[in-house]
Image (tube, rainbow, N blue to C red; front, side, top):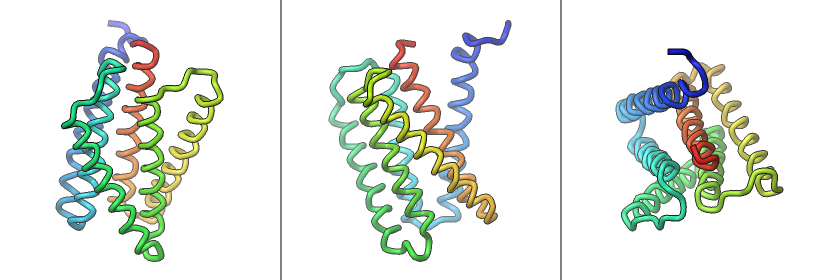
Amino acid sequence: MRAGPHWFERWGFPLFKYGVFALLTFNIYLFLRHATVREALDSLGWVILLLLFEWETRRPTGLPLPRSVIALQAFAYVTIVFALYRFALHIEDKPLDFYNAFAWILVAVGIEFDIHRPATRGTAAYQLRFTAKYILYGFLCLLAAIWGLRSEVLNFYDALLWILCFFAVELNQVRRHHGR
């Protein structure tokens, strides 16, 4: 079998995606062992949201969301916003955590727009969304690098892993938008 674009779509991308999701499962375990209950709850909210994004970007467009999905989304966003609030209360102690949480919420809102109100390629809305995501992901990579340079291994690993997970969701959205 020759490697090529078809190989990646058929085998490479699913292996990458499910490998990253397996690492995310390990990440949840680490948070349960080494983090606070609030941090674990925040992580759970993000995992639920990530799985919902994964599901939504793989289903046909235009279908209404089941009530159970809406309820899970509401739970996820409530836990995420509550975590942001908690980070805001302690911003002087851990400013990177606040900036990270805020940037991820903006990424999530961008993905929601892409799923439910996709912009046509080449339009100003598309360019604005692409530029905003480029800046946000760049900022998140910068935060991960800072944690790495500070030898905050769990924060670095967590940040890098979430970037890879959301990259997989973004690739799903691109494939969905282009009919693949």
